[in-house]
Picture 1 (tube, rainbow, N blue to C red):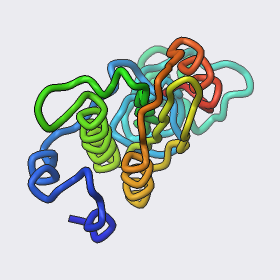
Picture 2: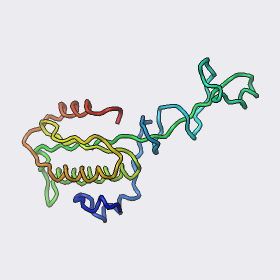
Picture 3: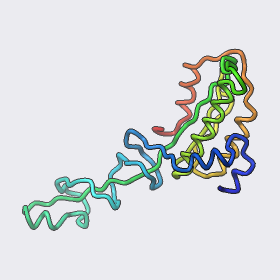
Picture 4: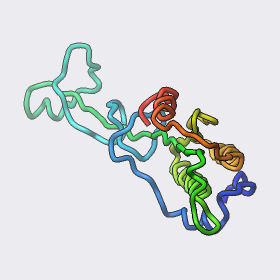
Length: 184
């Protein structure tokens, strides 16, 4: 366990141990800047061959597959598929309706624990995670980062969340979507 996580309220050592074998996989190909564990729609140089396409003027000669040329007499270039990271945004509704619950844990506390756990799983696989807390307005926004240090910031924001009487979920989801830099 990392030393950053020793001060985290919503992730105890037992929970971290149970989360160690989990991983999240994007259903669709994702765009990203770093190499990760998800297929990318971006084509380019990589270790995983994708397919051939017919050579077009302007393509670099070094990308020509000379074996295919030897068999067919036509020029084809190799295309590769890169693996990349994705950005995960955790959104938490902090309205008074989240106070509902029976026993020790209400919906808001459950959402905080779940948000912290999902953040840890995403970070562990070298993807980026961010957090948005909203009610009738966006109360807090942490842009996605892949550094494990963000877990401490997420935990601090989760501890500070206090429910307020109203929420306007459609407007807030729209506002949060505008803050996102790319597909997430």
